Amino acid sequence: MNYLKNKWIILTLSIVLSFIAAKFIGQIYFKTFNSITGGLGPQPSCPECITGFLLSYLFFVSLLLNLLLFGQIKKFWIISLLPILIILLNPPYEELIAGIILVVVGFLLAQLILWVRRIVKGYNH
Image 1: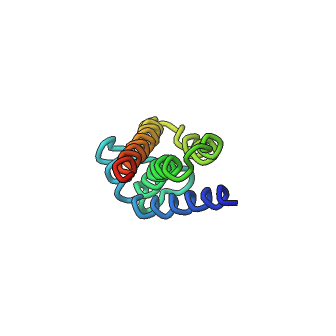
Image 2: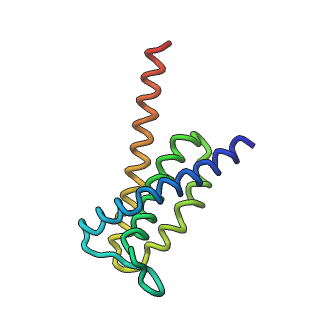
Image 3: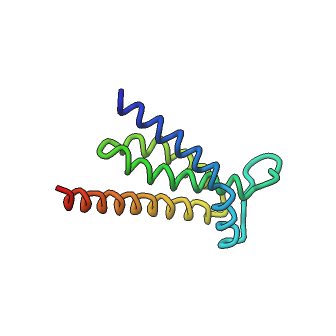
């Protein structure tokens, strides 16, 4: 039960943090690549917010999965990241590349935090 509760906490926290960071991440992406795809249908009033949300979701899910679900993350990782990466497969491929980079950065940042936490626990005992 605790495992299921952790998955919902990670999903909810990732979505909330993604909404908060969406415009910022989208603006950084737009300044870096000078392109934003608004997706299918009518163009939204803030296309960088959509791209920013997708990219920040990838980052936060990767970070939080590694921090909160220590050993059993492979299945949940695929379930939560794969749909977004498939959405980003539309040309231009800069969004897909940026998404993969953010997943890797989130993973490495989580590993760094866990490593520092192990060191700090070692000094306290």
